[in-house]
Amino acid sequence: MLGNIVAFLSSGANIAFFVCALLAIGGAVFMISFTKVVHMLLAMALTFLSLAGLYVLLEAEFVAVVQVLIYAGAVSIVMIFGIMMTRHRGDEVEPKRPLHSWLLGIGCLALFGIIFYAIQQTALPTGEFQAAGDNTMEIGKQLFTLHVIPFELMSVLLTVAFIGAIIVAKREED
Figure 1 (cartoon, helix red, strand yellow):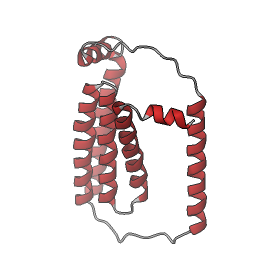
Figure 2 (cartoon, rainbow, N blue to C red; figure 1 turned 90 degrees about the vertical axis):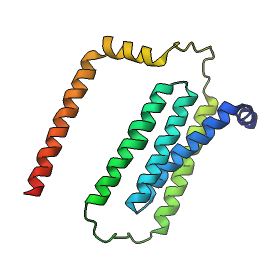
Figure 3 (tube, rainbow, N blue to C red; figure 1 turned 135 degrees about the horizontal axis):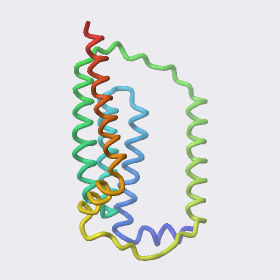
Figure 4 (tube, rainbow, N blue to C red; figure 1 turned 90 degrees about the horizontal axis):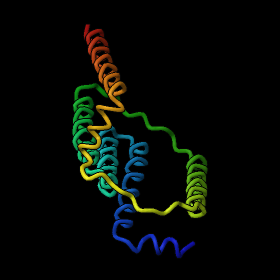
């Protein structure tokens, strides 16, 4: 089993994957662990950036750029504005529960161990992946031929959600 880990870490791409995966998981854990909203937002941005790194490793450059522009950039900025424009009461701190913390840690380690064992015992098929020459053109072809109806439905859904948010904000203002 240890030989598999050494073989995995013998490649630079695998090490980069491991670092990006740890940053993504760490950012997600920190996001739900922090108590200050700005710290949560920074942890979420770290998660988004590390996911973009994983997309680069998967040779999905277009998706990586969209991840950085939309999620790490735009969503983070919108959330910062939301934090700045709302009123916050004093942060209420929960009482410390050491038993719950220990049980949570043991449960996390057990889950990690089970997942690690399952991955080690799984026989994955080997083969050469044939990537498309131009990822962006292939995404466009798929999006506007096979998936045009869901694409249009999503735009209608986002428009309805945007109008609903404006109505709700208008009611709270009055």
